[in-house]
Length: 140
Image (cartoon, rainbow, N blue to C red; front, side):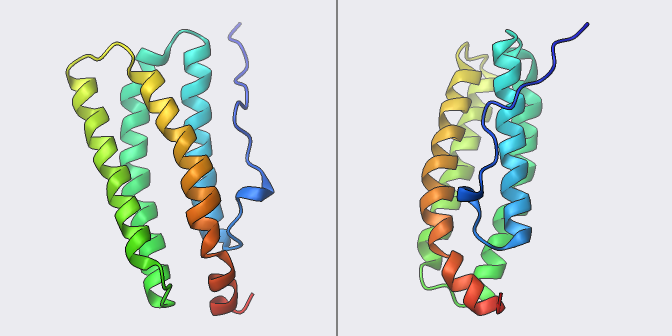
């Protein structure tokens, strides 16, 4: 019998930016983080890291495009900062991909540390900063 997956990093209402589409996308990131953490706890981090990187690359491409388009359409004043941070995330994913391709031993730990920081720093601070602007712009 296989052990049941745990929710290491559960979604909290505090992460919400009050834009349902963005919240749903952020929840997808939380799912990826939890999948990696669960694999690491089972000693399988190395076995899932490639699929996690693929999921993160797909997530970043879709989410950043969607979020930037939405913020641009509603004239978010800190748009350039948001875009720069997204490019930084994509660059870090590129570094992780290069590390993976060169068989870095601590790969899953490095990715987990980065994702935990991204969720707590970027989403909780930067993304939540546009919440009031978007609620007003979308009339919610």
